[in-house]
Length: 160
Image (tube, rainbow, N blue to C red; front, top):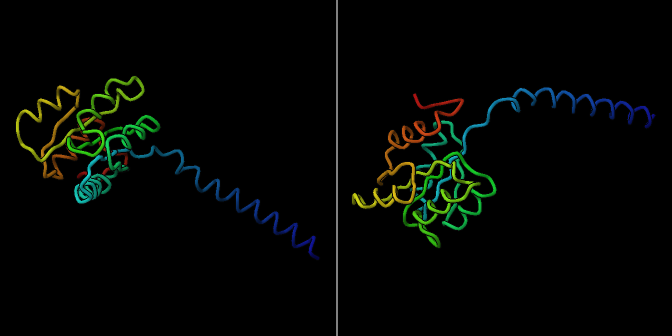
């Protein structure tokens, strides 16, 4: 009797695995949303920017400092790196220069942002090879439009 149940249970589990495989195959074939990495020391800014981007359909990752971000983008490059100028350990402009000078990461789109509205901040970001500059506080529409102009809207876009 136990051999019978074991045989039936084995068949059931095999069928369940096959069914699960069939059910997940279409999801696997869909394009995953572009990854946006946010680097900012202020948790409120990180969370708000992350919320805007995730709500629009992007996948969001976070780094707390410049070296953490540099290590992570080298391992798994995001589509866009959104970095504040003032972050711990390695400032945002230095991070931008390193990302843009490395053949492994040079194609990552970099958006530098700062709460300091001086024109020289935007020029410094441009000199560091940033693709764009945004001022704080980050405005939802401007942030989403900037990212969409760089890499396009996510496959399942909630931008409209």
